[in-house]
Image 1: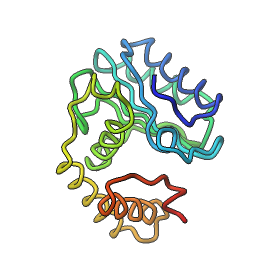
Image 2: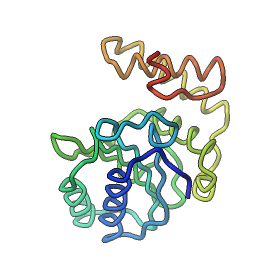
Image 3: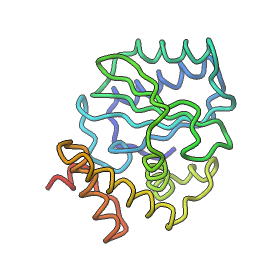
Image 4: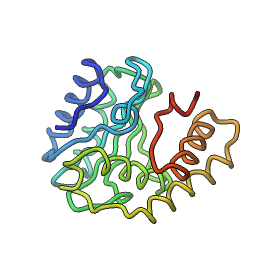
Length: 186
């Protein structure tokens, strides 16, 4: 298992999310992404970005129950960003993209593809087990996704996330390495 930057409360929450999913489908593996992977995770404040690989799609009542169970858990931070892939699916072809925050849980099926490709690119560099489930993202495809995210950031100049993403994207395109949000904010 790849080490993370999560605290004990976030790790316990991760385990509870996996248990909820595991009540309905087989959980094959899970991966912490974002600040929990690359650094900068702030206990009680940061999002928890989690990818889960399962053996079958979450459908109908099973999907509804899993979302309800996860929504009922006490968040250890600002938000859960959960992406579930059925084994064999490749980013951005997710089964479930769920955001959970103070306002509750909502599925986000229409998120832009580049976010999932960028996450996969970061994961394949840092998580050895990632390649057990996902095909490699080529450097060209990853750069295209980063350029797309930079264009998105330019469309939303008033958003703090867009500003941070732009700084991180430019750094990646120039240096080939990822910065944490805190590093990009300096």
